[in-house]
Figure 1 (cartoon, rainbow over the protein chains, first blue to last red):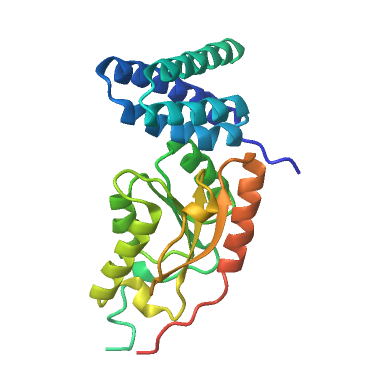
Figure 2: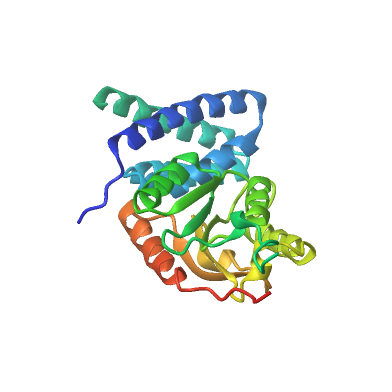
Length: 92
Length: 158
């Protein structure tokens, strides 16, 4: 039997990712990279779980970029996350 | 007066359903896991930070603790260490009434070797489950561990 995550949980997951994008952009403006590190770490863990392996990949890269204080790389990852969130908003 | 008058009923184990504490700051994962276990009859509590976890652990006995490693302010290992200290100084802590350590499974995106814990009198890390896998695999692993944790417990005679 395939155990799936309920559709409502996936919708809620994407809504929280939208909030993550907003929080990350705010954090980038203020230079608070610890926020991005935390978000990246969470995405690294939960992307695959919720059926979005690309989000896990972004999360890992975001975490590394934040640790290295590479704001350009971090911005790219946040933009990539925003694209995925927008794409999924259209689907749901 | 009978032998049970001093026992706090809220700290008794309910073996039929089992009681789980999910310590996880990722609310998406915590909620979906809680829903799945609750659907199967378990009593589930969620703690989104170590302080809430410590409160829960001092107030209730759990058949299984699912512990994230990277939490706000302290790691899962540090949380367990503090919970152990708390249990040692509280004579009415629920863990004092069982002869068996509470099993803990570490659920983390970190590698297993990064999630080592020290010796603990009250909690025993029985397994590590990686978050970086499909939900079905995570849930199956956790359910298997939970089933094993629901063995009958010895209660100290009074």
